[in-house]
Image (cartoon, rainbow, N blue to C red):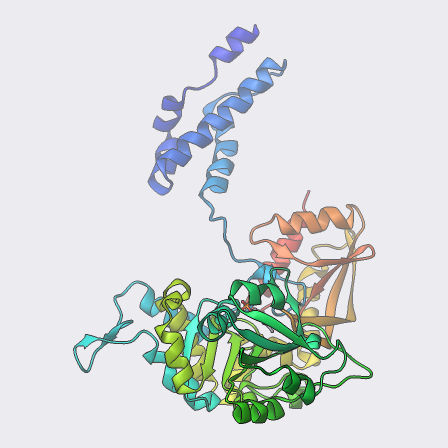
Length: 464
Ligand SMILES: *Cc1c(COP(=O)(O)O)cnc(C)c1O
């Protein structure tokens, strides 16, 4: 057969669509995607023929490739995956996963109209921020609150509202960078404020702030050293003392907490994190924190503080540009409600649960993963359960290493990089880390409901 003859045997797109395969696909998938996939599969056979090959070009033979392409094009680009890195608040993996309650509440409001800006009792227009105010007030002790898109936006809008064209005093020990694009000096510029640095990297005294005060001072800002620690010969001024200075000089004190921890984690051996309630009690006039770090909720920036200051922020037209939607409110309100019972919060909010779970429970989960894999990968990998350290991530608790247990998988017939790559491109993707020539599956961040799926993925990655 000549190349011409072979080419003429390639199926036509129309023929394909009318076949049993085509009719079945059209019932489930978008027509555009089906056609694109058929064309692609036919084209690849055409290229094979032109390169001298003799592929089977019957519709049945081409259907497999076509279906793979249809699946690939129909899959969403943003998708759930399994985090086996042990990093609990992994910014690249979407930070916190939501509690069941938060998810339920989001689903409940998602497909329905809501009273987002409607006062049901009065039968007229209401306020977007009213729903969340009472619960935040009750939990933090602050007078009022407003919620924006993320903590970066929270800091920005505070600067824009109170310090545009004026000075903000910050210690040199707190000029932090968080994840590349959030750097205090740059945020200051973007917020139109003039940064007035005081003190040194390791030591800042109250008199440093006092000496810098002027008629131009708009804010005293304290930034929580979320992702690093200055140790040794150091001194910083507490919120309490800064707040006293602020009151004496009639200048608001703002604390950017970053993580926004709502329960004391000391009984779990985590000491570094001040709670929002403490900082409010110590007299900060404005406190900002993230929704999706230690709080364990959706991406959001929460600003709590004195009523008249929050009112000023609500009058700022920029608030419209950073406002949150009903989905965020739904998830955030449900998450906050869970904090009414601290013990339940620690148990039911995944971020807190993962950070505080007893190491013996993690070891047990690693053991379950091991036993589900043992037979299936026999002869293809050496496996053992090892003690390791996980991290909080998300710029939270930089010093704390969390003792954990990992399943170490040392593949014998493929390289560890190949195994890692196959797991990453599987469905669902599994993200794990490589140490020397072993793949480490950290059981801390694997959810119980994911164990079976995870082991199926690993077995599939070994399959030839
Ligand atoms: C994380 C963090 C931010 C930024 O918060 P996002 O929610 O990521 O916008 C700002 N300040 C501090 C101190 C942080 O830790």
